[in-house]
Amino acid sequence: MPGHFLFRIMVAVDPNTPIIEEKRTPADPYKIATFNAENFYLLLDREYSQADFEGLAEDDYMAMNISIYNPNKERTKIAAIAQIILEEEFDFVGLCEVGGMETLANFNRYYLGDRYDCHLHEENSHRGIFVGALVLKGRFDSVSARNVRGAFSRNLLRVTLHQAKTQLRIFVVHLKSQHGPDMGIEQRMAEVRQLCSQVDRRNCIVLGDFNGIAIRGQHQFEFDPFLELPFRDVLEALDIPEPARFTHFYFKGGFHFSQLDYIFCSNDLTILDGGTLCDLVPINYQQRRLLPSDHIFLKATITVRIR
Image (cartoon, rainbow, N blue to C red; front, side, top):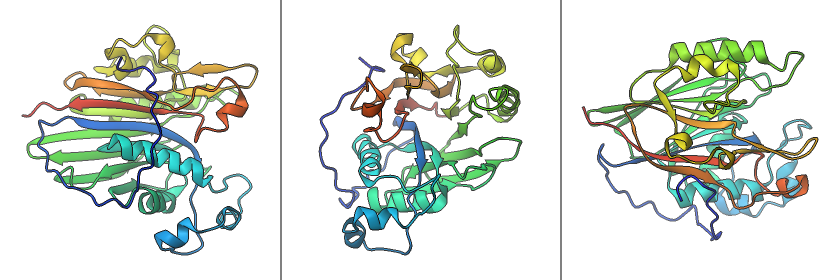
């Protein structure tokens, strides 16, 4: 059933498999996704060939980034993230908590076979975790991306995709977390207001980590202005039951599953399919640590009206 967890038999996907280019038209559906990769760093001391990179001892790889706060991500977890992207053949992926353009470029090169163009602007984040985007090469006639100015705690990325006579604009967001003396509420309220002033009302998608509950009827009050806009949550549009919409696992003080990640589509877009992707629903923190992130992939298949 669309929208529920999709359990998949894991098979090896070679990132070096030659790309078979298939020219698609604006009428063809777009496959998009969002994922918070949780402190995703992949920093190297120099450029490596594919074989040399794969042959690195794990200790040597980890020693290339000596940060005690933002160390390199385990390569088994990076490979798991890449496998989902390669299997699903997404046209667009919005990523949160990426450790800069170097990390995104290395991920694309060593794990995705350089199939994607990378977009990331290293602005706004004091923690060095940014939002970025992967856009499938050859899928669109042209792509432009820029950082949206504003008092955001992380960067807000605006990507414009052109194909034939259509234009699709995607905003990749990572709003202020619920931490700090006031649980971040004032900052998050300000970021929601700024987001509302920036997004388009047509041919527009807003996706990423909202760091709060934006499910209509259960939403936290700071999301009121955004939910007044002409957008639909993909999982809501597909009539996925609310208990099945979780995208984040949290085990402090018991286990808590919630939807913090969203794909909102403007009302003129057609939502064909969507759901969450996970190979394990953990029942404790030890199992959660086996996953590549405390978040899971959220995906959608949409079509844009040709003007």
